[in-house]
Image (cartoon, rainbow, N blue to C red; front, side):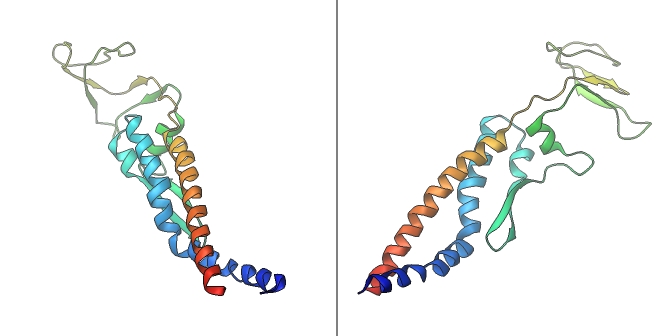
Amino acid sequence: MSIQQAIEDIENLEPQAHEYLTENLDSIMENFVVFEAKASARASNLPKEFTNGISWKRTSETSGKIVNSWGSQEKPLAKWFEEGTPDHWIEPLTPDGVLAFPATFGKNATAIYYMGNAEKGATLFSKGHFVSGLEKTEAMARGIKLGWKKAKTAILKNSKAMISRKLKTIE
């Protein structure tokens, strides 16, 4: 086989490498990147809704994005837990509603309006009050970074194996 023929054979592998990525991208992203993002969220003790909201969405033949669907456009809960929030005011969803929560009396807790005794575990009620903001966790970002490293390694390993097989059939 001539050098020119070998170069042409290798150039002909590019569509096959593209085909490999196209066919396997979803499983690679799910098995490596989404898996690690969810593991990072669990390790950070984030709510299960945060972890369950993490998924891969393909946007084209060879690309996509990791998203977290927890919450809504008005209340992007996943974003708040990932990126943190400043101290803020919370209130009931309806004007005649109240917020109800157990009295914990932690370091930042304040009993605002309550009914009954205010012993630990009692139910407190509020028409609205300030709460401490959420700390930034970056759990998804950490998991995505680690998962992407593992995905790239798997892609390279599998691509090399595929190219080796193809080159053997060319000989």
